[in-house]
Image (cartoon, helix red, strand yellow):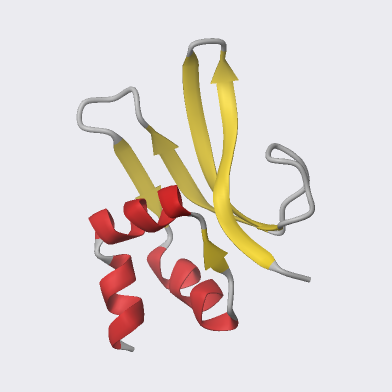
Length: 86
């Protein structure tokens, strides 16, 4: 089972809001997930990113692969640098 850290979309039409989740890659985008790691709201200025840092690093150490967008969010928050240094 390959595990991904990815975005699950929520919110109304034209008003997206995302949850950063750990999910099996075979599950649909907004379907079942293993754990919720935080939120991402691109509509705010600046975009709001709330992540549980320790839990995210724990999942990365277990082998969960972030998508390209999530990796950019992790780099912006400095979590990716902490993970690669450890």
